[in-house]
Image (cartoon, rainbow, N blue to C red):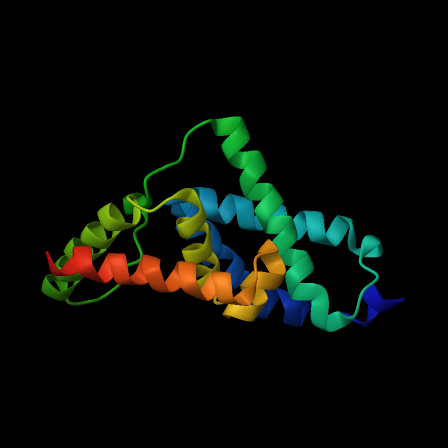
Length: 163
């Protein structure tokens, strides 16, 4: 069986940070992101017998589960937590930490101006660290469309950053 050939420890070690960052971008809340990451891996583990594809397709299967977990979360909560509640700064230098926090808050406010689709693609690109081909496969969009949307969103982010 294919699912038995998956090294779950390796998968967990490799994909956990990517799934967690995906949820950080989606929810804006580190604690919620941890909870949704745990739910995603629990669902993957409990439905591992349903995974009958090639081991290389596992990442897409897992992020498909993650996207459904995110949809369920927002459906239940009916609100999106602002991304500025994420505290990813862990520097020893307080001044540097303050500067990073200010930059992060500025980026957060700009990210909040994106459409849901743009923010979702940005979450997959920079949170989950998927490339455009992987995002296209995950979302059903063409690779060209993914690249165009992300390019425009990042261009708008840069433009707003410079203001």
